[in-house]
Image 1 (tube, rainbow, N blue to C red):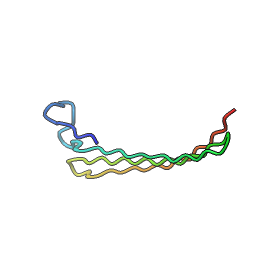
Image 2 (image 1 turned 90 degrees about the vertical axis):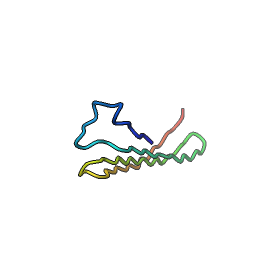
Image 3 (image 1 turned 30 degrees about the vertical axis):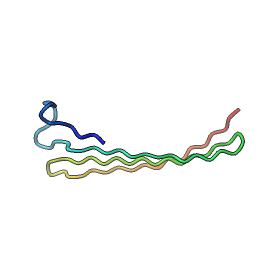
Image 4 (image 1 turned 180 degrees about the horizontal axis):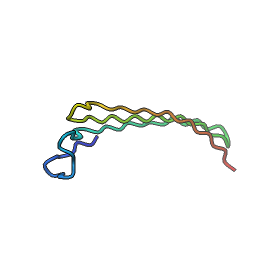
Length: 68
C-alpha cells in the first residue's frame, strides 16, 4: 500500500491528489511433468481526494508453459 505525503511531494496536483494506492496480486500454478498451467489475478485501487473518488482495475491472466 502506498500512502504519499503531499507535504513532501510538491509535484502532486493539488486539485485531485492521490490519497492511497493499493495493489493486490496472487498466482496459482499447477505442474504435471513438463507442463505447467497458471492463473494470476491482479487488482489495483487508487483513491483520489477530489471529485474522482476511487478508481479500480482488475486483471486475470492464464499462462501455459512447456519445459524442454
